[in-house]
Image (cartoon, rainbow, N blue to C red; front, side, top):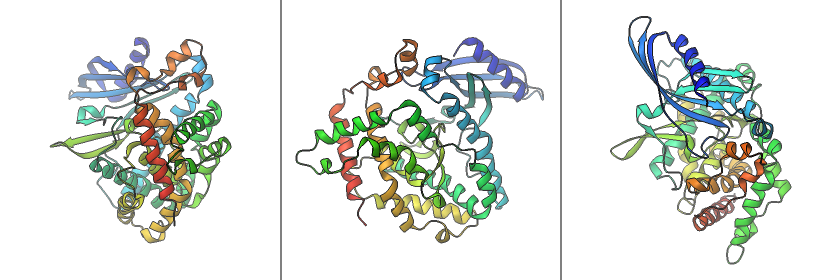
Length: 402
């Protein structure tokens, strides 16, 4: 992001937040490969407001790339429009709904505040609260999460999904209006980038690596099936869909710890949100962040999630048994968890790689190369990668049984 672009955004923010005296300090930017569709810049603003109160904001600026080639290869405008919609429409709607249900406390207080959203042509941007200033940090993407981390994330998804389920149950017209502008971002992404073949190739590579002496070889998907899983499958069974997080890997969770144990989690990055089965988020998370060789029985994990969903549905004046039974959740797992398995095979290649191995999409585009060339790389942690995916495939097969 250019200094001028940062300056222009800061001027808008300063007016919006009522500063009359202020200093702006750029504290850093994300590194190589971290800016998938743009750049992330960390900024602090310190000053006085028009009420003469001292005010300090620690901010994250997410700005879209202006590279024409990359914008032609990726749905970048749609990514930012979707995330802006989540912060501008969905989260406020959920907050208003909980207050209507009689609660003064904010169940969604752990989500970062959005101070400003800009949706100009080729200059999309979001200015968000920097959660690091509150003590939140990302976990190590190369290591499976601990049980304490897993439990927090599952409970957080239970809370988030409960709002969709409760709003549909209590205010069906309001829910219908809220989601009618939500596109199927995964389908848009896969079809525009033609990435289904890469997902298929990554999966086949691991499956064939383990085809001797294990049951991994038996879990086959054709390239057409992979395409269907990542596109049309997500729109099935609309009666139980929720507004999903949609991008459920380690870097999109921030944790606060106390005495070395995680106590809070915050979900970030909503550019792949949409309407789908809750199992999309759950299987994506489990097959990218959980040691499935250790946690072999998915019911144990899904019970944590289901308990959280039911708890928040009750708080939102709903009868959980009328909305989402555990049997229904397990049926969804058997039908939709293939989404997480396929996506996890793709994501783990990135999350287990060293920094210098991860492709920089913007850098690739600036060299005039195809977007698909970004995925022609191997991780030096190949042995760990093959083991993690093998465990996922066996876990998937084991938990398909009735």
